[in-house]
Image (tube, rainbow, N blue to C red):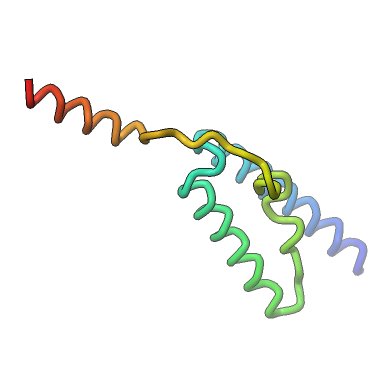
Length: 92
């Protein structure tokens, strides 16, 4: 019974990680939005530890930034660039 539960859990965890990777593919790595999403995922995984299930090392596997990994953050987001452009156009 235990191995069936582990197999089932792994299957669904792999599916979750695939969906998370796909959802975050449109978010630039290392940005505030990216980190907030990863934090929420880990927060929910921590809820499972309260009932004896520890997936904290397995959720978002491969998505976290490694220590020392430099990510080039944009100077401005697309929205900020658009607003800045509109403000410049209004001045002219």
